[in-house]
Image 1 (cartoon, rainbow, N blue to C red):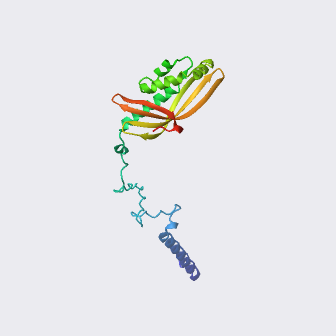
Image 2 (image 1 turned 135 degrees about the vertical axis):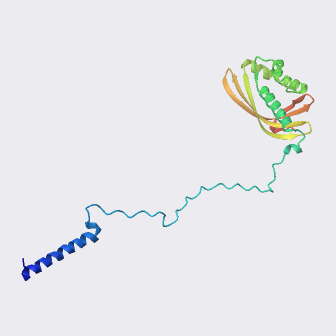
Length: 211
């Protein structure tokens, strides 16, 4: 069938429209389906080098000066060793505890027995005489006095080749018919050494001196 001129123009225009639509479908990916476009592949290597985590700080050793002097051994300047000083201090403390501990029920012999081997015979005799002074002894008995003593060494006052004088605080808790009281005194106690060890040979008030 022969087409008229107007019919041929209409067919040609329809062909152009179809071809144009086919071209859009073939070359524009978004029009091929309703699914989303694929994501671009991840790169195999990072564009920048990874930043390393900072290492934990390490402690630097404290420098020790080669010229730092060692603590001096003071016993090289003393006429006794460290163990001898400790023994002297032990005897001093034991004696001072016993010196401040007594009871109205004790006579002088019983009182001195508490210091056996801690005091020299001469000092023991002096202490026994002091304990038995009539006025002091009668008051102790009348008031039923009992004393509990405790001692603390405060310092080292003096020393010689065979003797050491300590300053000692003796505290006494005294109970009697009137109640309880506390008495504290500071004494200079001297110990002397011989072949048998240390013994106290003198005790005085610290304010009176003892060297």
